[in-house]
Structures are given as structure tokens and as C-alpha cells.
Image (cartoon, rainbow, N blue to C red; front, side, top):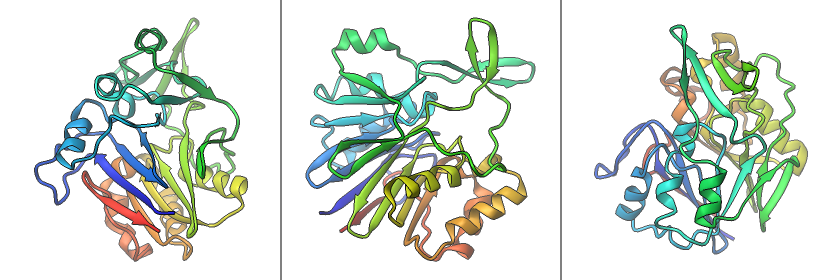
Length: 276
């Protein structure tokens, strides 16, 4: 009944100095003999890191992409040269064209592949639209988050392009992974654009179980001071026995997390935890 979660790539280097870091995130997950990947960073570097750590990606069963931003999906094309038998799980709207509005221009932030590529490669894929989707025993893909924390707002610079022009990106494609373990639920976040607290509270309401661990990106880097303070207090709850956030959490929030939760660790490239 053990779970092992290894961070194949993240913004920062860890103790494994031979590993490459980049702005992005990728998690390799083993649970009860099953293997899956959550996000692929922005390039093939996560594959090189897996090889360096002697992790075999060739027999992955599932790949789940949290949302359609390049730093989470950019390595998928390279992965198809190493793994041939996985199924791909995406949120509804994953292939919408995503941009950021900066300096009076639109910068493309989206994927480097499309549905045509997946079909040509023969990769089975599906879009999840239900809130709770069990893809293998005790492994859930969660989406359609209840956005009850109104202070968790999406930066208006994020846009999607449609036929009529650009409009705000509400990140309706975003998903997370929830692992049901004997110790409680392990929540793995990609970037938390819909709001970290919104996303975790949705998991709690759907599974009706305590959350034991939270890993991944929380997007507190763009939160105002008030929202950041509330979110840090939220991560300080006694029930959270492991808090391994990073990526888009931002240096300011991460520098304070030890004050709120003694179980916090900076989840860097090469970090690995076992939960049994």
C-alpha cells in the first residue's frame, strides 16, 4: 500500500547536482505497483533526470497533464519517444490557445502539440469533465473546482484566444491528482490557478477524508499579502503532515512556510518521498 512520489524536475536544484532544473514541474508516482506521471516540465530534461535517477518511464500506465501551459506539458512530445503504452488524461478545454498579456503584446504560453499529434502517435487520450475521476485504484483526477474562496483570483494577464479574440483564462482545464492512502489523501497540484484552497477543499468534499499531504505548485507567487497570509495559515493546519510545495509558490511564501508548518520541505528537482 505504499506510495512513492519523485519530483523529476522543478525550478530549483536539490541535492542531486547532476540533475537539470528548469521552470516547470513533473512528478513520477508509483502506487501499489502502478506507475503514472503528472506533468512533463517544459522540455525533455525531466526524461534525462529520470534516467539519471534510474527511473524507467517506458512502462508508464498514465500521464496526466494539469493544464495547457508549456511548463507543464512541454515535455510530452519527447516522452512519446520513450514511453509507448500510456493513456493521456486531460482537463476539458486543454487545447485552448493560452496566452499572457505583457508589455502591450500577447505571449503564447500553450502546448507544443495538438490532438492531431496524439492521433498520429496512436496515444489514447480522454478529457475529464466530471469532478472526480478514478483512473486506477485510489488514484483520482479532480477538476471542476468549487471556487468558494473569492480572494483566490486569477491574474487577468492570463488569456485564451478564441474566434472572437482574447478573453480571460478561467483555467477550467486545470486538474489535480489525489491519492487515497491509509494515512489520508495526498494532493498533488500543478499550478493551482483556480486557487489552492479552492482545489484542496474540493478534494475534501469529494472524498470526505482528511488531506495528509500537499505537493506541487500553489501560485502564491502572484497572490497579494492578505491572500498569501490566509493561504500560509491554511497550509499550517495540523492535519497536514507533509507540505512539499514549490514551483509557482514563490520565494516569499516558501521562506515563511517553516513558521506555519514544521512538516514543510522545499520540493526541489530530485526530491522523493515515500508514504506507507
